[in-house]
Length: 272
Ligand SMILES: [Zn+2]
Image (cartoon, rainbow, N blue to C red; front, top):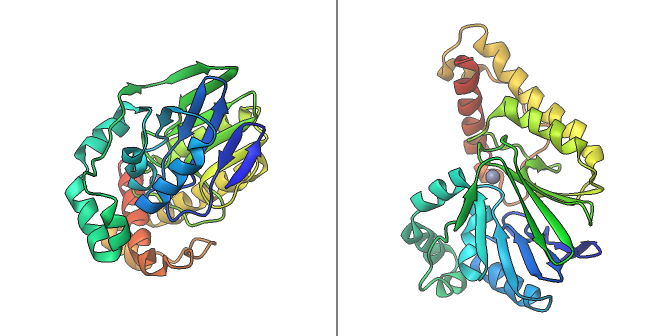
């Protein structure tokens, strides 16, 4: 775990997203939850030393940000689209995956359920807790329901996968043009530190590079779509490769991720 600022902590070493939390005089506010059950239990023990969890904010609907909700108390808050997504997930499928791969984690999932947000919104809301202001903003991009959490007193910004710090890009549910606009809005906030969805802690200085990464994927697919190619032809003729190789242990997923990225970008660009 890393101390990010006076009262903010985050973890970048779990197999899943980078969860974090803010310690306020009124209790703890978590941002996203660990995906792997044993990590979630460890995280719960760590956070308990800082206070009671009041709120959990899910910054996006993907399983690596929301599965761990089950292991925590506290009111879950997310975009209403994230609630719809979570309600569609199958707890039985999740248990089945761990049954095969990790008996220790499976043992922690006896009554596992996906915990959907109790509070949903569109637009922006603010939590005033203790002496802290927790701004929660809808900024679509990596998914349509992406949130960012900004704590002005700490100058810390949590972006989930709208910022991927030197790890591969994931477009499967993306709104690529909105993504670029959202990154520009993130750059306007008075943040000093960014906790990205994946990869190490960074600063707003990384945002121009992140915008360029989104844009170069769009460009790489667009040039083929403009030639009138079908999706199958685009896949066949696509030569662009993300400048960042897959993370260790995730190499096997790379062809699947590439296909999903091309498919989504094709869909968007074809219908433009
Ligand atoms: Zn994601």
